[in-house]
Amino acid sequence: MSRFWTDKIASLDPYVPGEQPQDKKYIKLNTNESPYAPSPKALVAMQEQVSERLRLYPDPNCVTLKTALAKSYQLNTDQVFVGNGSDEVLALAFMGYFAGGKPLAFADITYSFYKVYAGLYSIEPKLIPLDDDFNIVPTDYENLDVSGVVVTNPNAPTGKALPLSDIEAILNANPDVVVLVDEAYVDFGAQSAVTLVNQYPNLLVVQTLSKSRALAGIRVGYALGHSDLIEGLERLKNSFNSYPIDRIALAGATAAVEDETYLKEICDKTIATREQSVKELEALGFSVLPSATNFVFATHPKKNAEQIYLALKEQGILVRFFGSNKPRIGNYLRITIGTDAEMAALATALKALLS
Ligand code: PMP
Image (cartoon, rainbow, N blue to C red; front, top):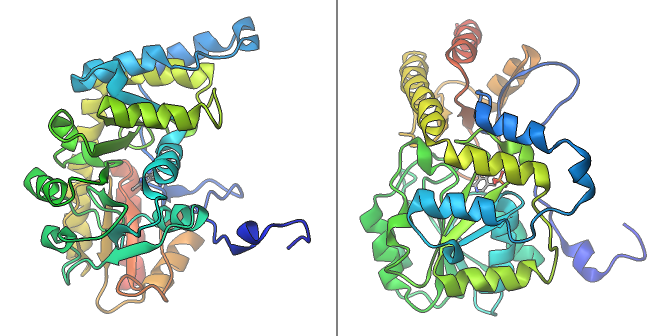
């Protein structure tokens, strides 16, 4: 606390990211990073940027990256916005589209950064409870008097996906506000709403290179939507920071987006490992929610999640535990899908712990 802080700073309740401990080498299954290296083409493209040209600013409009994304999703470049991680894209979207005075609708159990942005921009959250099986119920998103709707598909930390018809129902029920669909994990098995962008001028789809494209370290995310929505985000971005994507990130992200073969290869590997891991966890007595992501959300009916989390950490395996005080999810662990070898090490450690 400082006497120079405004009331706004004092009121903030900042996001707490998953642990990134530097004390020893962990098997990191706690922040949904990819266990695989980024595309080799992206690595070469980034290495080429480490040169005297770093004295120059990067392209503020990120044309190469927008062109690659537009081609990949069959959109025009003016339907693509890029930012420093999807967190920055979300932050700008909240500021631009949801800070209009009315509450913002999103699920009670979802990505916890939404509440933080709501606090930052003085937006009142209208929390819509997931049902008893942790599903988003589309009819709960009808007749809302809100500034906008955020749907996470697949949802985090549950990992559960909604079919496209449910997303469409939410869009149809909310034609006068922006419906933001956060698809950070969509490449691991859910249906993307990108195919609806030309039909719904109120749809903003947000994705990231941090998960399926194994590039959390360069911080690149993007939004896809109607050109008017994208222009709004550009106006905000250019009123805040003209160069959020540096030269190295721009080159790496562009090459990664162009390398669709590699994207598919590492997503397929993660999905196969996930299916195997679910079987192993269930054999150990865990109940695991069906996941369309690169993580699973699991609980053991007879064991305390915090104790499992702490014992695994002691053995050098990090998983995500959100706190025993969290309603409904206090005895759950979110476990990122690592390599087959990492998941085998997890299974061995759990077997010993649970016996
Ligand atoms: N959305 C969801 C649902 C997430 O889980 C994350 C990762 N923490 C993000 C957005 C942000 O990802 P990034 O900023 O790395 O693109």
